[in-house]
Image (cartoon, rainbow, N blue to C red; front, side, top):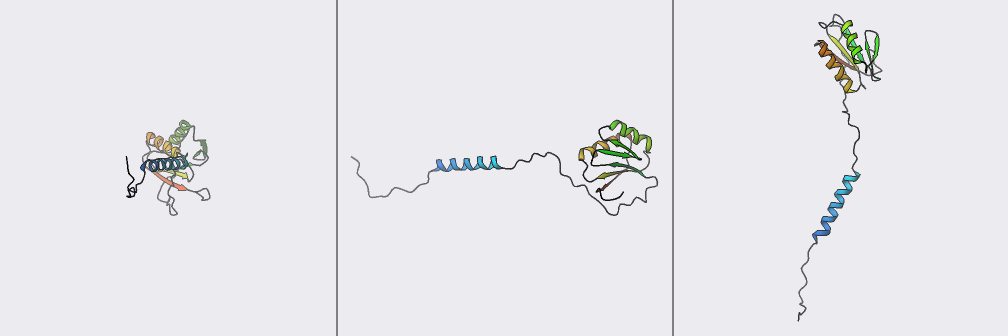
Length: 138
């Protein structure tokens, strides 16, 4: 026969419910965390107020606009027609001169890379990049 003792039972913390609560909290925070759907790089291109074009003897400017247009010596083309863009650049501009790539601030970075890669393939190695907002006059 077992007799009751006057000693109190030792105080202890049950770990099983604690582990369950911790896992429930982890699941809650993972599910409610904001998952960003945008996979583009948010890139702020640098701007300058003192871009000096006076040191270029023959100005060769290719404009990239945010609405997927490219302007080459007063000829406007769509960015999707890369072959025509590079043909026009090759005909209008000299590879020995400085080529200015004027990029509007909201242009997708992917379009800038496409144009720069194509210019390099054409042999244009002296390229200056100018960024601007739509309000600025070029």
